[in-house]
Length: 256
Length: 256
DNA sequence: TTGCTCCTCACGTCACGTGAGGTGGC
DNA sequence: TTGCTCCTCACGTCACGTGAGGTGGC
Picture 1 (cartoon, each protein chain N blue to C red):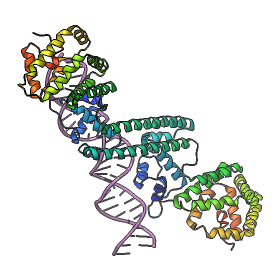
Picture 2: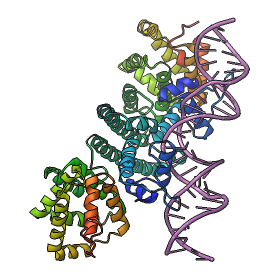
Picture 3: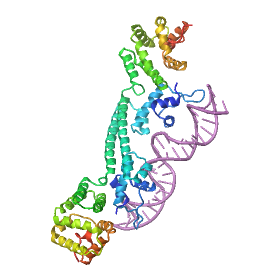
Picture 4: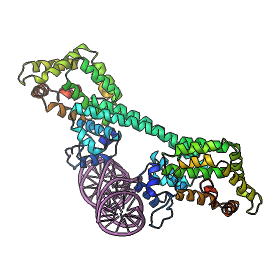
């Protein structure tokens, strides 16, 4: 007869695990020898390996208990289901590997692929990491709140970059981050922005009616970007002085 | 700004999980709004997804905590290690699938492959499931106790079946299970067994000297098989009457 | 006597789950 | 007032791990 450690060793489990299975009623308590030690027969080895195989496949012990009493047909069906689960688990692990690997190299994780493509486009246009980060954070918040809108919005935003004037303005805005707040170019830039918006008002209005972003969110985007650069605060002041409600709201709010 | 459920939803976790990560110090507590609700920014989304990706890859939270503060180089090394673990996990799952599948169709689980082959040989010789089970249980116990001996022993046992006489005796013994205890064939069979053993004494002795099985284990094998059939009890009585110590010890014990 | 394996409580651990009781704006 | 989301304890769960204190044969 086998001792508990021989039994456990053969099934590749700890002694505690065997005792736990006794407590849970999965493995019947065997007889004891003169010293009160448990003594196991061959059937216990078979039973324990059965239990262990199922438990290691992720079957909860409560269900293992039920399966041990199932008839062969029912058991075979359950095994098929367990196999499906195991295959699904393999797929999930592959997905995990992909995601863990992408942790090393930045974006992507929190964003749908279209947005990642868009951010790559910004980079390739020569925009700074600073503004790419601001964009990224904005899109992350948008994706978290309105996941179903992101596809449309990113399409519209990307399309705006087809316009050379818009591209130049955006690049200028990016560079203005490090300007002094009393740099005269800030007023020029404000003028350019207003001119551009007025020119293209029709298309912008049409686009905006499809985009139900509330003020609070727009306000957040403002707050987040603005807090940083003195030049950008100044730019906002200039725009407000000219009747707009701030630069990130530029395309949304009519002049007073 | 995002509420806790928006944040959780985007990362695919429960609200409780987010709070748990706060408690564990993994995710910094954000500011509160007027109602005392937590309000999250885009960075929290990125942070949470980082934590979640690592946690789902099976990294313990205590280690996640350390990894979040690691420099990129150290982080990259850790990610490589995690990837190795994930690959190992995939292999383990494939192994589990194999083992769970084999649960449906019997043996194999508790036994090394040579023994499974041996049992298949017994079956193909026309021996009953009853005696195959007795053999299987014996080998399971042997494998549990002396895993390193099983290879040699099974080789010797299988070789014995090359002898036609031995094969016939074994088949006869199998069939005798259902004989009446006063069937005259039992005495004939006992005679045949003794004759066979005496004939081949030399080879048997040589084999036995290589096989250090203690009496207690042999006794177990006896006890397990004997309890069942009246004819087998009777066989044992006859053998004992003729000076042997029992049929499973036939090959081991000298006549008195 | 020392070392080893076994025994039985019984509390600990890990990553949350699950009420219990309460608040704040529509 | 009802319904919804949030809040903070604090105990529960799952599958064991880990001592604590003791026994029995070499």
